[in-house]
Each structure stands twice: as C-alpha cells, then as structure tokens.
Length: 215
View (tube, rainbow, N blue to C red):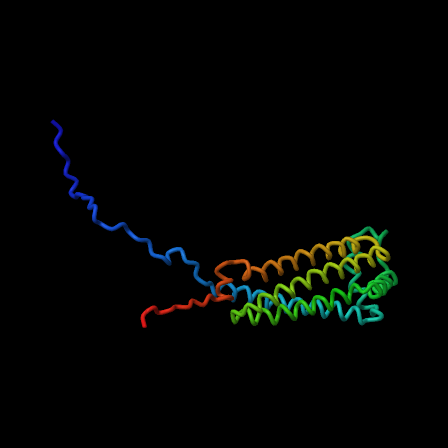
C-alpha cells in the first residue's frame, strides 16, 4: 500500500472566499514628461543647424558675383577627382551661380529653412515646458523646411544641370536627397510627442472631475 506523501502544506478551498480583485489603475497609461523634453532638446539644436544652412543660402542669393578665391576654393576638390577632361572653370561656376540665383533656388531654400528653423526653435522651448503648442509649431516648421528644402534644392540642381559638368552634378543631385531625408527625420522627431500616447498625455493632461455625492 502506497502511503500518502506529506508535502508540508495544505490548501483548502473556501466557497465564501472572495475572488481577487485587480487594481483599477494597474494598466493605466501615465504621462511621460521626460520624452517630450528630450525631443525638445534635439529640436533646439536642429533649429540652430537650420539657421546656419539658411544663412548660407540667403548669403549666396544676395551675392551677385563670387570672388575668385571663393570659386577656386569650391572647385579645388571636385576638379582634383577627375582626369581633367571635365574640370569646371571659374566662368562656368559663376554662370551656375547666376542661374541658381535667377531660378530662386537659393532664396526658396534659404528663407524656407529660416522660417522652419524659427518655428522649430520657438516650438522646442514651448515643448520643453510641456506646452502642446510647441509640438504643433515644431511639426509645422519641419513641414515648411521639408517642402522649401526640396523645392529649393531641385531648382539649384536644375541650374547645375544647365551649366556644370563632372562631379559637381552628382554633388547637387545628392543634396536634393540629403535635404529631403534630413527634413523627414526632423519631421518624424517633431511628431513623436503627438503620436506617443504617454507623451500626448503630458501635453494634454486629462482633468478628472470628482463629484461628492454626500451633502
């Protein structure tokens, strides 16, 4: 006969024992304040970078003629990468510069990135203070920078296709894609606080109204 094994404990089921109740706030989504602030810091430095890029394009748009030293500095690297048959002369680059200014490429990209950078700059400060308007301004600024950057880069590339040869053509073609990718990334980062549920709760806090039924 097999004897019963004593495991050292026993369990008894009590019919009157209440079922365990899960806490109501166990799966409650809590606001995340660190996420929006981290995004705000990234956008702040991104806006400063856009200011530098915008200043460069606006300066090129306002410059009627480039100095010989500037042109030689720009052409030194691309001309050294070929076999000499497709070297760009100073006159050709000056023609490109005139064509780019006439097309409005420098102006569209410069002023567009400047406006977008300004909105992102203001938006980043408000976002750091957990203001929902900051996220909206940042998304608007990134959208403006994306559209203006691509359009301006395409116009500059068109001027390059009409006047330049060799490696510089590839350079300005890559600039179009590079500008688009960078601004899409900026737009995605700016939209994160509005997409993420916890970050959105920090920007749009829910106000609970508690009514006491007792008089």
